[in-house]
Image (cartoon, rainbow, N blue to C red; front, side):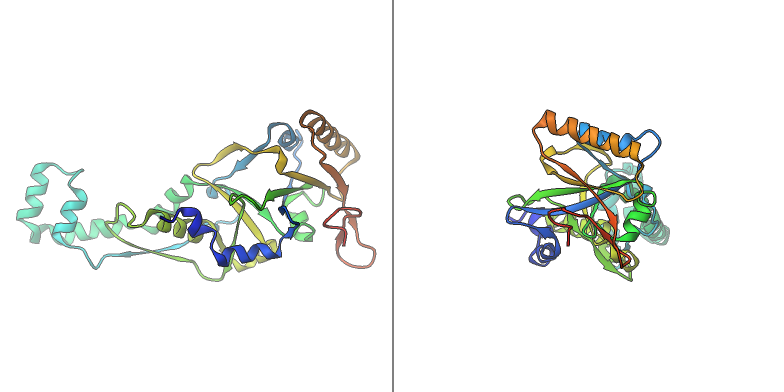
Length: 289
């Protein structure tokens, strides 16, 4: 029997990993960080937690937005009674059954109103947590938008190729993805396949305007902080605008982590390229090109 991973990590999806920075053992993903006044983000080198964010808190109101096509063609007395029997009283069920002509139009309107896309979308977004990574670590817009104009930093994470657990690629499009469902479909006929469709269309599809990010995502069934393996750390890229005091705090955080956990995570300084509108990272094993 196929699992949800079989439906998520398809051949088509796996081909998108070919564009990633990689070696024989790892795929490399990047995440940019903004420094606030309290420098709380440095705790990531101590607590090893990813913050899985609710889509309701994203900066793009279109993110995790999709269209739902509820099929109302099969609206019948029998299906309606079966659908509400656990919620209705015996007297109500008898009334629906014996006087259907009187109730049919009102019940249909109630079902139609219940299939409210905006309400469903809000509930859907509340259920999930998302961590965003990218495959465009030196993009100027990424640094401007997500690191407070290059004052922050980016972390390079390495995910073992030997494991199926890794960020999933975003699909970019100009139209909302469509999820089709029967109005009374309480349970999925093929749970892994149906859940994978919801994740792909609801959480892994964005507007083409964001395609420059080359985004990948980890998905959780709830928002919040979840601990990760510190071995996922690969390197740190320091923004060209980071202050010297912040560089010292960053290096201290890395030194403490490396010493305590026997790691060798190094920090590299990003620089403005000499003749082009680009960033360079001298001596970085993958970004010094």
